[in-house]
Image 1 (spheres, rainbow, N blue to C red):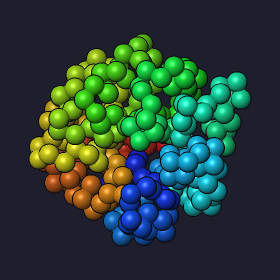
Image 2 (cartoon, rainbow, N blue to C red):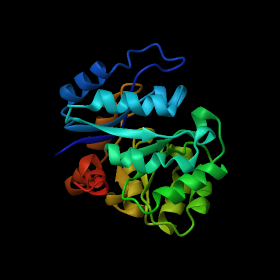
Image 3 (cartoon, rainbow, N blue to C red):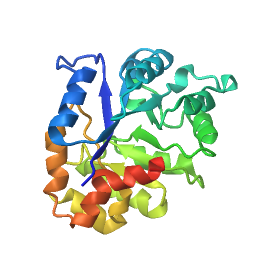
Image 4 (cartoon, rainbow, N blue to C red):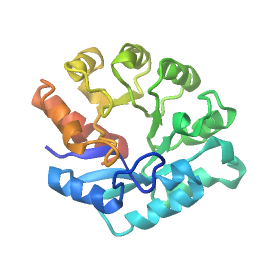
Length: 239
């Protein structure tokens, strides 16, 4: 089965003493048979999204196994500069948002502006939605938009909420790394089908081996495992 990890990063991270270097990420991918990973520099999360995006693009240059992911902090985004279209033209394959770690609300007016700018594009979005109420708020903000939106950080306590919004919005997906409860993945697939689940590990902040094992031992039939481990995100990326 082809494995594509939709949730990785590299670089400095506050309060984390583990090695989060790009070399460690690449070594982990090779050790566990991950063909490709979507990744970004943590500089874009904790310092400056402009500097982080530049670092991401530079580090991904010439490495076919890692695909660059852009991030934008709405608190410092000015749409008139056409940053989004420029980032897409530079080759970024996905956009990620970190409201929890950066401390901004989901109903931030600029974030809604960014969603409107992204709507005509094919580039998927992943956003931290680990808190109760996050998935519901995002569903309201999306409205009738049909842009692919991947919920990152869904845990057992927010699984029912995620399922509810996914049943109402066919363009909402769930990423797997935080969903560690036994049977959770099988339940999710039964409720919304296996083609709405995206494999992610949060490597190297979290265990790539553990994230893979959770999917492999989930009890999902092999066709669904293939979708989760790589097929679904590959489809969203356009191959």
